[in-house]
Image 1 (spheres, rainbow, N blue to C red):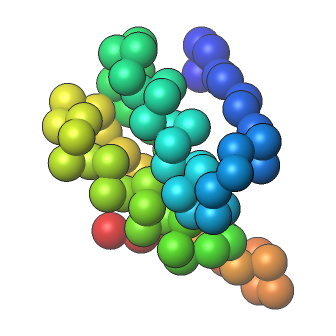
Image 2 (cartoon, rainbow, N blue to C red):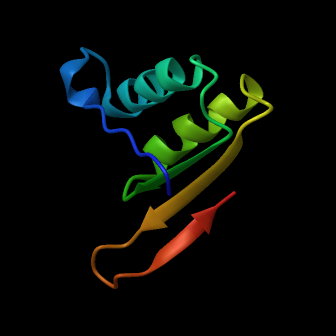
Length: 77
């Protein structure tokens, strides 16, 4: 990975899933990304993330559900 970028969604006055999607939307709007990955332990956060696919058709989206109890990571479609 050449570059990574961290932003804190908790600084926005929105529900967590919407805030995370808003931060990602802002980053994708720069048109500097051709793929994006999200690892999360909350299905709602991942669903909001995946909704952005309709807006950014040229970006590959990868969503992964993390289970803290088992350590399992599974791809979300």
